[in-house]
Image 1: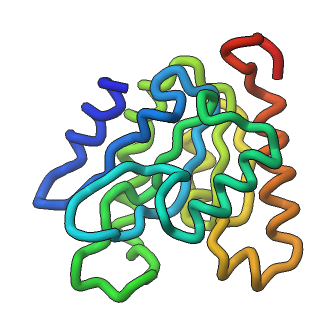
Image 2: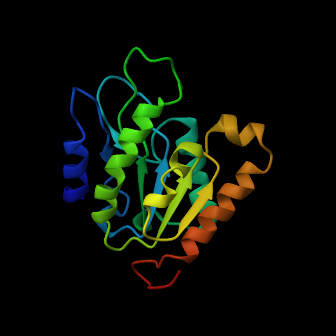
Length: 178
């Protein structure tokens, strides 16, 4: 986890807040990277990128991971735009094109810190732009936000199917089985 959090620390420039990686996830031993869009602002201090965060998208993600059989020790969660939105930003505002480009330029350095990586799950349109940067198989799924899941009846099933596909590409660290 130290190398990943060193990477996160290196992104904290210009006073931008960047959450830490969740220590309950797989860290550098993760076989699956789940790339979301951007962290939500929950107060003023950076916290963890985690499916334990008390926001609806993360609650959905936690439930979908369980349904797909993809355990926490096999994943690491990050964001295509790793910085928290500015404090004065409109809530749930989409990241700007320049933020997306800058975030994606930082992704190859993260991928190099994940030597066991077998698959990347790109959750949504913004993370989908990272497909060409990935050197392992990619699974594209809709973003797990409630707005997306509730507005599109097939989104939930497509997310679970994609996470199940990712689970089939990884091995459980304790049993060696999928």
